[in-house]
Image (tube, rainbow, N blue to C red):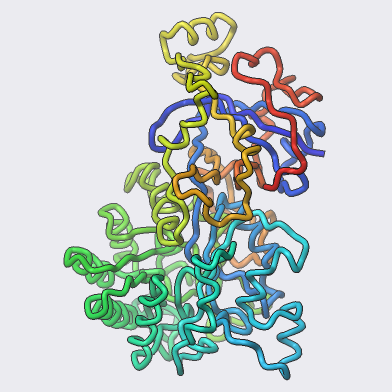
Amino acid sequence: MTAAVVKLLGVQLWETGQTVDAIVPVCPGRLMDDDGAVAGAPDGSAVVVDARGMVLAPGLHDPHVHFRDPGQLAKETMVTGSAAAAAGGYTTVLIMPNTVPALDGAAVAPSDTADIEAMHGRWSSLDYLENYEADNGVQLPVRYALCAAASTGRDGAQASKYADWQHGLQGFGFRHPVIALSDDGAAVPADILDEVAANCLKAGVPFIDHCEHHESGVMTEGETSRRLGLPGIPASTETAIIERDIDLARRTGCHVHLQHVSCAASFDLIRAAKAEGLPVTCETAPHYIALNDTAVERLGTMAKMNPPLRSEEDRQATLRAIADGTVDMIATDHAPHTAEEKALGMLKAPNGIIGLETAYGVCRTVLVEGGWIDDDRLIELMSVAPARLLGSAEPSADSLLAPLADEAGERVHDAPAGPGSAGADAAVADGADAADGREPLHARRDLLDLAAVAHTGVTTSDFLSADDTATPLDFTLLDPHAEWTVDPERFHSKARNTPFAGMELTGRPMATVIGSRIVFTRIPASRIIDGAATTDGSLPDAIAHSVVAHSRDDGAAA
């Protein structure tokens, strides 16, 4: 039993800062919920939320995740990885190609019966992921695109064949398109680099490279590695690949996107490449923002990743690169592993940590609360810029305001309430409390009615809108000031390998909206207005100044 709609009173739109009331349908049969405040409401009811202080932002996009499916289901599955993404506020992710078999589009040999069985009879891992929802009878609470392997089998010996994966390009209409090439987990070898770039140029997709190569070492080379007696990894293993890849962009014109950049010298190289006007973009990750190599002493293998955590000087350089625009976006590099694998010790445990469910809180705590950037820049880093890389329709708060007009072109409300306005004065007279400086709870505002938009035929089966000019209807409801403590036992991911356990964070996604419908919520009971829910799907008279909620249409896809 779940509510049919949620009404958000006094929510703020990103970019414009405008305060509106928003009606958002709940996705029937597909809602995930942390504490039951919304999912536990009477079936068909309208739940009214005091959303003052919350922000309706474009859905977060992660250009770098590992869902381990097919082939490594003990670590993660498409279902658990997607649930983790939705719980972290992500509406779209890019799946990396280090699946088993690799995501190269090549047909699996008929003799590989185990692989074929794992892929439900599909002929390649690419075919398997493109058809995952239909084959498994599920609707995942996140959109996903695919990054095909740059080399066949991801072994670096030969460039993958264009013919093997070209059918997955966006132009062929797949819901889960191939939008890039990479051998993530390893840098593409120099002897096939130009051929890979040629494939990218032919397909019109970026080359995404794991910008590091080393044969040994388990943590960054420095004072901490020497004190712990662990083999170190020098920064040159990263800068050498970055320098090489920048030259590739210069020679070929191929768009090069550099993954999980982590050290000062690398940012200097990227800064210079951008000044030169080269087609180079880069990402960093929350762990390089929040942690340095000394974390290995406290956390052991939970602080083992590739590239490794760097020095505090490198971490500070990462923060400066974010602040000055050198860093284009933030990716989680969500890399699930089993507890048994991570218990093998620093020399044998696999690299990587999970990050989808902590990324926004970690980044906002360090970057915004720390004074490096503002909230708008954080949304640019975690939503707008990665959406651009993935080819998603670019969100705009201005275009979102179009549904505020009725069919005759008139505003539903043309007098948004502010301090001193007639609407605000009336609301205060009715008992609303504006002492905290926020707009009164029941002030008259423009109404953003996604319940109406949900009935226009826009569905989550479209990775991109059929109409390039259409407003993308994927959002994340953020509470930038929510304080919470990371508890891995409450994660939706199958894995628990996080270095952030017990960390106190400020900022958390409260709901995730796909195709105009809520697929995840953790809106706390304290935000639900007492007595506001009704059982007939309508909104209570006290707030009927806006609109009556549309009744749920179970036939509408979400």
